[in-house]
Length: 348
Image (cartoon, rainbow, N blue to C red; front, top):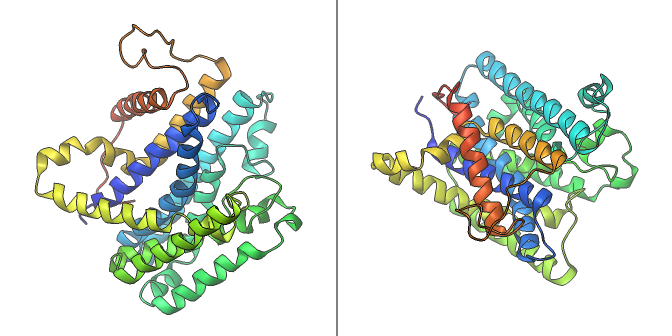
């Protein structure tokens, strides 16, 4: 099966944005560089939803085209990898950022989902979404060819944004339907992005989907303007509507880019780092988290000197500094990965 590089480009862009956002959140200086707040807000609104959408496209391109037993094995393996990444990232955050003792309880509380550490909640959300996909593959295959039932399921999932989040006290239930106890990306509310990605993966992003995305984002923008930023944790309906047009545009650009580079091998080679980001997204996300947590713990940052070579001549905490050192981090992580990486043949 030929690998769909448009999915890799889409995931790669999102991963780069997520790492940039994490660097800004840990080391940025919004007081001196106010634009950072808007950059982080835009990435927060777009990144996870787009990643789940691209995940849905991956499912359509691989799992749904395989016999059920093989697709189930791949789906469970993918979910387990995300869960393992959550344990590693969560334990590192507890020890390095919160200063917890590195005893058996640090990883055990994360393993048992008694604690959902910061900057790792998206990993457990991906694991649970993958597990749900694995357990419902026949239903996903059925829904992917029936737009009206699919829309009904999406509407029911989005209706969950109206539940009284404050009454959800259990950590595990909160991961599924949302809570005010901790930050999380509840599976039910973000499931429509997965379903939309699966449908787009099988049938393309048609004009009706594009018009719907435009309408939803327009309504969300009106809410932002009239009432201020909607709730992200737990997610409100306007928050979930906000990235729809961005997802549509990014999907269109990634598809066009992949089609254009297929006939232009030098350009495809030039864009290979971006495709590697998407192809090995979990590796980049977990490794960048570990690097950021370690740097935050030690307080070790590049020394700024105005007359130094680039990028050491960029003011610490500025937007340009964050972009430059995000690129450096991803290049180094990518180089380390090449020592053991084996290119995949399909999208999972």
